[in-house]
Image (cartoon, rainbow, N blue to C red; front, side, top):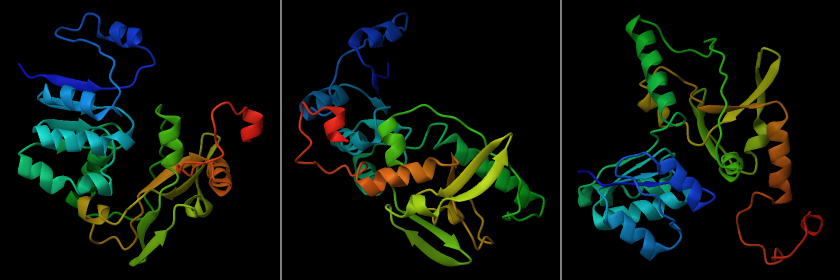
Length: 247
């Protein structure tokens, strides 16, 4: 029997226990992923870790999995820190699969599928493709905001462009009107590898982007300019402050 550890987030243990009710060979436990010793003991006792906790914890989880030769699956992006663990993971003989969700994950599969279909018919991918995008998601508010506080790299007219995380929201541009909703788009992290990943060497402009409702990037930029998305500790931010004092 394969022993699987699913790391998720739940406000109370009772809610996790309710979710586990009726599932065979399933036990809900309370585990603080910030406590390395407790986390490692659970990882070492299983054959596979499915991590659904916030992405900031994945590097430490993968490191412990490498140490204990346990396979890992996450739904989060492959960050530079995770990419640096590729060689150690291979040396340990384990598999670490990332980006196995809807976004990122399924979106890559369908992008490759559609691009392949275009190439099979002798076509090329161009900027004139009219494929309106509509989606909604539910995830960590902290993760959602910090995802808009990343630097970006992309290819524009065969020129490599880099935008700092503080300036990214400032370059968002109107992109599409869909059923009364106005969207703006901006580059999403590092687009450069996707020219190879998606097999479109003919493309001289490659921008893997995100869409947001009009006004969203401007609001997030204001938060960035005020320093609200800076994750560094603030000496003045002490327990007991009221919201009025903080703001």
